[in-house]
Image 1 (cartoon, rainbow, N blue to C red):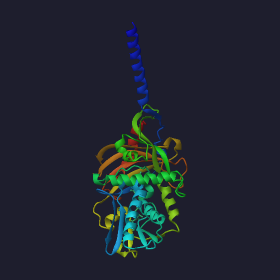
Image 2: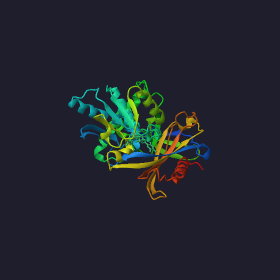
Image 3: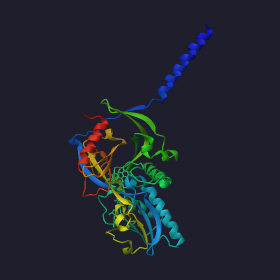
Length: 387
Ligand SMILES: Cc1cc2nc3c(=O)[nH]c(=O)nc-3n(C[C@H](O)[C@H](O)[C@H](O)COP(=O)(O)OP(=O)(O)OC[C@H]3O[C@@H](n4cnc5c(N)ncnc54)[C@H](O)[C@@H]3O)c2cc1C
């Protein structure tokens, strides 16, 4: 009898521990109210192009035509994610070489391009004490850098495995930079960056696991998103994801640099026409033509701004991938759905949110693949289970 009692007690204790374990390991359920996606709540449509370089972005220095030239372009869909880290990396290469050449920090330096890569490169030069920096650009407004969605994740690039460790290192530095902005350690750039939960279907899709390994991000959690309409999705959540409000940040960067660097609006057709002997080339897509880089590809993306939303309903970021397909015009398209709490400059608090997206290699402004906007909205509705 005694033995029987002990066995029953043992079985119950195992069952109890099993229940406790199941409770502990059951994914957390998070309630999310889907955004309003009917036509009344869809705003500006944006078509823009990622400056992608096959194999790896170009972050290098060399001596060309009697000038010291650094290159910093080709970041595809991750220019904001990597920008501050890439700028530090390239400016370090440049300043080491300048020291070897006995050039001082008063040496005139030209930065060509005023997108996120150009502005962060100029900012890093100024921060490191360079005194004579000029930014040349064909355009300063309405660039891909203003339109970008704002997710910090090293995705939508085409890197060969060999360069990935460097990309990860730069990405981790960029994460540290943005985190320090959030913590108020930079007096500028106050309103453009914040931490928000960021959801992916799995850890690999996020590209963020190296950030966790490096100890700058916390491990992702398994969660279930419950949209309150019968649709639930299993996702992974990085609760310390970083959202960059790109249009605001572009304005902040300009304001920081005003008075510290010269801005000259001009299209450059050859780096030889620039008077400065030290140059950082940050021309993005333009580098294809400017320096004859045949690895540069334009990758089209479609975005739709949302309006009249409840800002609390869009206080997260999410990215899921759909199948590869062909557009009507015959381009290969990798479709995905993403949503970020992006705002256009000067917009009302309720005009918040952007949805994307497409990844169409080789399509330019003359082949807008317009129908993709409608396909994207349908993909978003299907994801949330909106009838
Ligand atoms: C739909 C979409 C969504 C995106 N979302 C994200 C995101 O969520 N997160 C992220 O990290 N990234 C995102 N990106 C990617 C990001 O926008 C780019 O990687 C980044 O903006 C590239 O910056 P850039 O400075 O290289 O180029 P650009 O912003 O294109 O700037 C290039 C500059 O060079 C100048 N220029 C070019 N040629 C010449 C010339 N010959 N003479 C003089 N000036 C010249 C231009 O006038 C411009 O000033 C997205 C991109 C797209 C298209």
